Image 1 (spheres, rainbow, N blue to C red):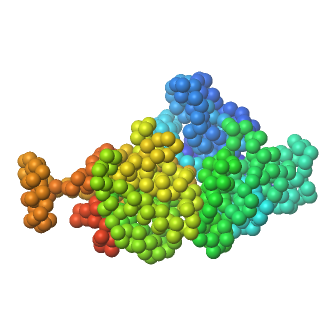
Image 2: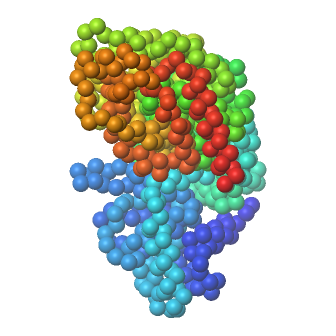
Image 3: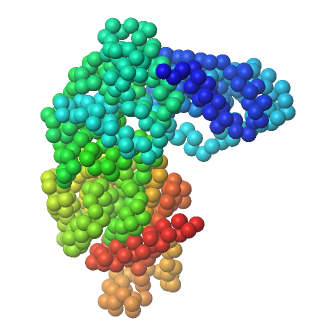
Length: 612
């Protein structure tokens, strides 16, 4: 068995070198000599908001959560911290009260540098007095540092239905994770073998020395491997309890075809964990390889307070690779903007991404971008998705005008039928947002409360109608007593939402905003008869190239979102803005031209990225 103290010292060396990379070896040793080892138990506080700060901490093992109390006295979690994180560095300079409370989610080991030793280091040499403050200041100035998501090291696989085979899943998942780092699978039998003690893992005596041996061995494994997969037993015994209490994240494994019910492990162990120590739980619904579409996901989610869910076909390597990227915090999110018929270009961009071998793990969008994102979330070959779009949009979805437009110019019945029939055909049943293969969200504007709503659950047709309900052009949608309308009013290009999705590390955005507005050469908008006569001339002979009323209403609804364009673009890692100036917002009859415009542009951009 590996000596855990030796591994902790190795980890300390590694993390100090990463944090203070510019320090000379002798200076680094001076820092190390002044560090104090700190061990805290699960549930203990490292620091409390409002207390005077007098030290910096560096995490060596375990996991901690940061809580902040706002002015109303409400406490909320804001971040989780894993190995190698620096905590409380500002206190070395200011000595001001702590800005947050930090609680250990698991037994954790840290090192501490107090203010007196910090000042002593600064006075010991010119090299330290210049380099040490600079490294701390650089860290404080890192952009969006507070939003960096720490990936889990120890994942517990918990079977919560009779047919869920956790051991088989662990081996398949291990193979997928191996491409991202070293992995160790730890079952109860393997723990007994590693410690040369039969029955140790399932010892129900709750003997402290035995529990300590288990924890020390896990700590050593965490120091040695990038990932440790703890495989819980199918029942709530001592080993399952140990796994649940020593995990960075829980993966709840359920066969989607099993009866929907709460498992004894959930009621006897998970539900008894205090809220402040409850780690993230991801429901993994397991499906057969040939499954066309998930169904009944809401029933599973309604029974348990999970953080996220994911549909996985264990016999498909691509599904397991997606889960591996999510847990590695390197998943790829695709965000699609609204823009009327121009949104069909999203399918062309998707074709180019697919040909480039870029796997999409999470999708989100607004308006037509949300419809295209939902189609992509069906996880079918791109040519099949494009065929589905051709079939769906063979008739314009915006030509059923109201003869008496009291709420909207367009009735919206065509759009409703298009969405309902298209997804019913793709899924084989009336769909819910949570039944899509890929994690999905869309944006709607809540007119009743003047806010942006992020829709992740509920009726698929209703959500997509809501995100497309352009004020004045299409009727609003009722949801839980509120009026919802087009999400583009507040957030047409919701990359900020994707940035907050757990597990996403790379964001690809497809923006449909026109890059260069066309100047007009006349001073006044003509009256009704002047406009009518001009429209009779045909497009090429018109003197007044003004938008139609429907196009004008659609464009105005995007204005606020367009004003945020530079900010939104900065949140993407790969940004596409296809040249679609010649495509009208209502040019639904040019499907293949729009596909091609998106595809040609994206392929050129990707080739440029590779060569650059």
